[in-house]
Image (cartoon, rainbow, N blue to C red):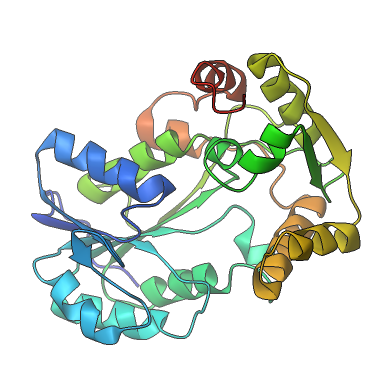
Length: 283
């Protein structure tokens, strides 16, 4: 259930994961607007917050009326945290989830699913954001090292993915955190067109001006490569489950959530790749 949507900008906004891809962009946008006090929370940030240390929750929540919620992989603390947040005065939750999460199995997205369930069961306003894979997975962490090495190997086949810019996701989140009219809504956030990972790799290689090849792997070979690179088994299993979700086509649809919230089209991968390549990140 949800309460009646408020028309007043929350005076305090708590952003979890404030040093992450979307969190730090949201903090920057909200602070640039100057319309609210922004509490930037992470394990080592301005406001200390740790999912595994419940004693850090209440101090982080102090003064927050709206909350950007990025759930941990472990779903067990999520419901209790949402209950405490609502009791502390949070009246608006914006949850970062994932496109197709309702189709995910046990191996992927359990924390996100728990966060969706918890806020739906609260008495506060809630909005769910379900983005596709970020552009920034190619230049900030997940696939950066393979691209630099000249070869990206994944178990995805020809199933397309409408990659989305984390800046667009942050812009949507900042709007939903501060505007009325979004209570009880779920926004699927994708880019304007779907590309296969092979096409995305080719786009980045062209922008970088250097050869980078895409190689299709079996799920078993992909897991073996991750483990050989030092990934924990739990992380390798989670990534494998994520790609199983993609292979089944549950994330392949282009959606208009960015336009619904921002009134403009989402950013396209190709101009983004040209701009990022100029920094030399893939050299």
